[in-house]
Image (cartoon, rainbow, N blue to C red):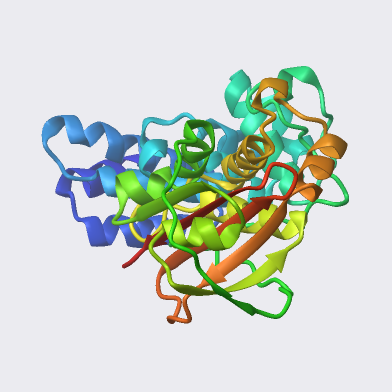
Length: 326
């Protein structure tokens, strides 16, 4: 069988290699699939364009393979080019209890632990695991049920969270000049980094004195439709965006998305000097702000998130629009 795989890779017949990958997955021949992956990856050195097949085989091993072989896929050279981070892929069908003894690299262990916690497994919130993102590993009861991405043999599905958002009100926007607020703007833009650097996404940001009518006006709007959001809804939406790669970028994963949502909320609360906040403190800080999702009534196409925030104690507001089109 190994000589058969050698000949298959030597011919660089990509269609036939993919069919063999499917067959090996169906037969649960994980050791042979790992061998085919390694042969296809090595063949690139001789000019054969078999790297995509190696990437697919490694992805399938992370998704479906037994815990020990799946764990070995996490730092394989092909992992960089998978449809999403393999620390998230492996978390779909494997438990932390199965995986933890097979993963030695500290950052990789941490990310896998966070991903398993997002899928509902209680993971020990110890300092070694938490060091990778610093925020609590297990979501608090008040946090949303972060909707996990669903991976299949050929791709990933991660639609926008469907939330029970309050009725919409129309706001007349006031012309305003945006102020500099680098910490909050940086936090906003970091959420959408994959959209803007790897795809066609664009982010607009405004910070002003006054209510959200001023912040929306600073974005150039004359009228907008707004709906209030609860803190858990804010985290759900921002985490979804931060996990996504947008239209063409590589997905960053649920753990990274939740981190981005926590960082953004902490920045909005002017509490980055206290990072990381406890879960109770984060909730209290978010409840002191008023959060809104907004639109101009246009159809939502592609990837989009538009949020406005008002700090009633300091009478400051912020608004941003992030969009990415196919």
